[in-house]
Amino acid sequence: MRGQRRIDRVVPLHYAMSDAISAVIAWIILFLFRKVEIEKVWAWNQDTFELDSNFYTGIILVPLFWMALYAVFGMYNEPRRRHRALEVVQVLKVTLLGSLVLFFTLLLDDFVSSYVQYYYILRVLILSHFFLTVLGRWLIVSRTLRKIRNGDWAFRTLVLGGAETAVQFAKDLQDELLSSGFNLLGFIQVNKEDPAMSAILTRLGGVDDIDAVLDKYKIEDVIVAVEPTDRDKTVRLLTLLEGRGVSVKVVPGLYDLLSGNVRSGAVYGTPLIHVDRLVMPYWQLVLKRAIDIIVSLFALVVLSPLLLILAFIVKSSSPGPVLYKQKRVGRFGFPFNIIKFRTMVVNAETGIPQLSSGSDPRITKSGKWMRKMRFDELPQFMNVLKGEMSLVGPRPERQF
Image (cartoon, rainbow, N blue to C red):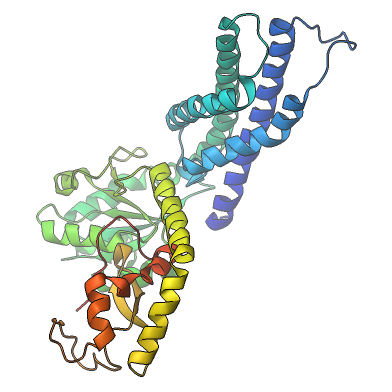
């Protein structure tokens, strides 16, 4: 079986090439429409038919614009999991948005005899780009689905369970395993184990081994098939899997455990529910990250004189480093070092971590007013710039 990681790198390039070709053809169609229908210039009349600057600009820049827009909306992500209905909906939304941007930036200065012709131009742009892009993407999706059904491409899958629910799922899947897209590598025993499960799949470990198994076997899909009575274990498993870069699916009997921020849908022939814990759409996540980068860069540049002064004050007030790093728990439970100006004496937290107070003797003189003014937290803009924190979101806490 071909390396799935290589496939996930190559297929997005196919989508990008298809989008670029569709954009070029749509732009040529629009140009011909403007010349023939709006300017009344016949294509075979070389004396009056000229390729203007907008045409050359469009041939080069417009495909790049469309590919960037599709990337922002996450349409090159998870290429093996896309389907035809999804392509139609997403391409339509992006086409409407992108066409309006192109219309107001490149096409609105066209000379027309009637403003109605502007609507004709916009309509041709939308329709030509939409249908050409959908056609190209449908061809790629159809090839992908054919590869999956033939068993050429499959998702490396781990089952969490081991008792009756997992056994029944494994048995139901046996008849359609090749066409389901699953490559069942084994199972993790969550609670009690049914001997029949070991006869079907290989036991890869227990709950404490999940992280190691995910890394060792390069797991892409995880199917949670624990007993409906193990509610607490199911919630814990979903939390453990969050942020691990795997697609999580649960058997229908566990659907009532999922919170309201989970989007679901049936996948493949076997009744499963796809768990998506992303509250924000992909384009909003991209926009949020872009704002974090821009604001943090701006703040670090504008506040650089103040940061230098504060660094000098910290250094001169007590011996030790200017910056203080502390382990915090970030997104998906991953630890990182939060950066602050040091406001305590060196080695103030040797041993068991303690909560500080206003009269804490460990706090330096400069540290008291810096904490009061929140100046000690200004270096955290570097954490935001690195993607470890966000300007808007829960405060990272320490792990005790």
